[in-house]
Length: 369
Image (cartoon, rainbow, N blue to C red):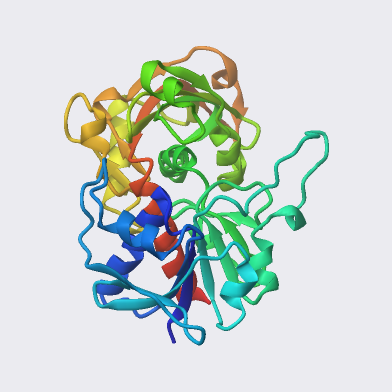
């Protein structure tokens, strides 16, 4: 029996894209999930107008959208293609969940994650995660489309989604777009026997809503990023080995993550060796279609916007420099490990990739529940 899905925060940029991806999935005869309701406090008229409008990045979405006002005894209705779902404009989640059973909530609003802390010395626990309010009112599982340290687990398709445990994992963070762009290529290398000793990263990232307008339009801005630390939540072997930062640039969408790391291998590595691993992974269903390859020499954001993967590798920019110091001189498991300084460039559509992944994760969870 298909699992019922609620999309919360359906009127934001990620919420709209997630809703569209769910409708696309249902249109492909998906049997494991069904969309029953969406919630957006700004109201039905706002959502219908937003869904019909031309998006400044992605153009017009291919769906026939309409809205029908309800009555005292029935909710508003939102129509998308051949699907008619209940619509709510509620800040009070209990009113959305009180009359229906919801198996999976796709939480896109961003308001139900880690609480804001005035005192950073106070350690947050899982009980602090705001999305647990959905569970208290009957939902079975919540997928947060953003990073949350207090989630039960951080899951990314193609990286660690197979570690999902229906008994333990009720609030799931799907991590950030940048975390996905880092974790995906790193997981491929680890699966190919590469040990990563230390890593630094930076991301040249499109402007986001957290920036003031003049900061977004007029300059490149240095900005903190939690993606390096969050990658350790997705790939535990990298916890504490990473640092990084972000450069916000005046573009609407499309970003690049630069990874610089010390790679240990029993054999000498070349850039061709590293790229072969990525080419193979892009064809391997094990990685759930979440890693791709850019075929040209130099990539720009126009080449990345519209790509659905978590990470699009730019092979022409992969570089490997052999090192002659450090752990390369040590004996590990009776084998000498050779050390290399590796650079990998990972492009990502920071809106579309972040919307495709949680929908695929919801479908995967529905199959396993």
